[in-house]
Image (cartoon, one colour):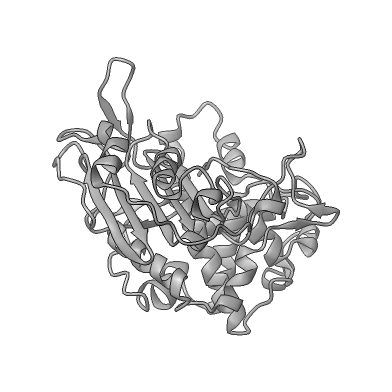
Length: 378
């Protein structure tokens, strides 16, 4: 699943911002940001704002699907898409805490049959998007030329691993470049299975969702489980208006890079765990909040733009405020989580329509609380 990236100089990535967000924001101000999503017969979004661990705003807009016209609310489950990656990273971090693996372990350690190029790919490089693995979606579609996407069989995480094993090299030597990789997170899910001896979805349930009482959150596997209170993805039908349900694609069954479904209520519990360090201690979380480094220095794009990415989190600041965030985008869904830990502010937007930018909307809300920059907090 694709996600939009945001970059800023790494020197600013952890700039401190004074006191927690203290601006008084009315519900009317927030409602104005999402007013275009109010509807009784169109897909929409669910919005959650947390301040200092407490709910400041929560509301659903639009409907879960066009068949039932059920209203979106705090219990509605959305496909998180790449928002999922922070949970996949947390699984790896829990196994590292258990002493079952090291971030510097080679891919060959877990899959001895993997080609020679896997010797230089480490768990850390998979987490940081510096592994160089080929994009599985592109490889998959090349295997079905002139075939409509809806006719292409869905691939699973194990299938992604197999595709990577069929390659003779990566796109670049590991650690020499940064390039966002869905393939890497599918392979991480398979590492979780290999090391734990449990299906990835089961490990998520036992080690994250159940302990945090995220009762309605799951890695969705068609035919094996059902996402309760589920929203279905939609895209604009055409320029004349209307909607078409676009809920599944050939890559929708891959779990590690984007297969989790969750709701506002459950994600509030996830945010609390991050805030209170109930799942992973502050020290254990530190690698996730450390920007990736290349062998020749800070991670950058080919054009020289710095990249701030840890383990499942973008780490670039917003107007000088320290931020950990991630977007998700896949057929029918757009999602975002924007956390400002020094300001005690979290904004989550989950949408079952593709014509909006949740990050843009979330940052409009964040700006209401944060002001234009940290100088206003002094």
